Image 1 (cartoon, rainbow, N blue to C red):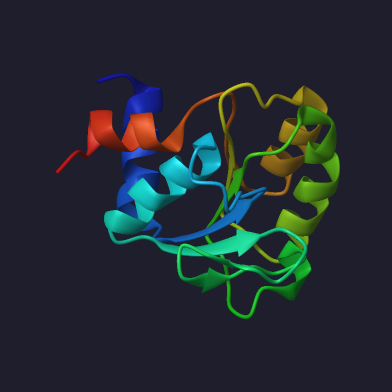
Image 2 (image 1 turned 90 degrees about the horizontal axis):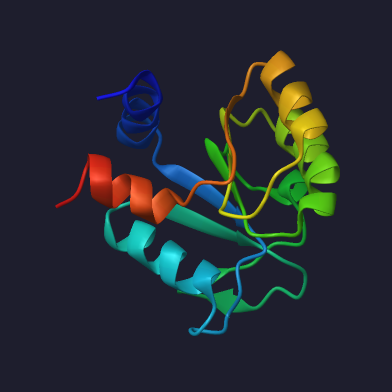
Length: 136
C-alpha cells in the first residue's frame, strides 16, 4: 500500500463527520450517490448548499461558517474556481481534511489549506477510496 493510500485509509478510519459542499438533492448527480454511500457507511453528513432543503435526511446549511458542530472532512463537489473561498471557510471552522472530488483542483488554495494544517486530497473520489481501502 502506498503512503498516500495509508494516509487516506487513516483519514477515513479516523474522521466520521463530513460537510459536503455542493451536495445536490438530485439522486442522479454524483454528489448525491457518493454522499449516500458515505452515509450508509456510518459517516455523519452535513449538506452545504444554500436553500435549507432536506438532502439525505439532513437539512442543508448555507455555508461552512454556519456549521452547528465541528467538521472533520470538507468534501467539495464544486467547480475548481470556488475552492479558494471554501478553503478560507474550512480553515476558519477548524476542519481537519479538505477533500476535492474528481475534477476539482486548485493548487494555490490546496497549498494554503496545507499550510493551515489541513490534510488535502485533490481530484480523487472519497467513495472510490473508501471502497478500495476500507470496503465492507
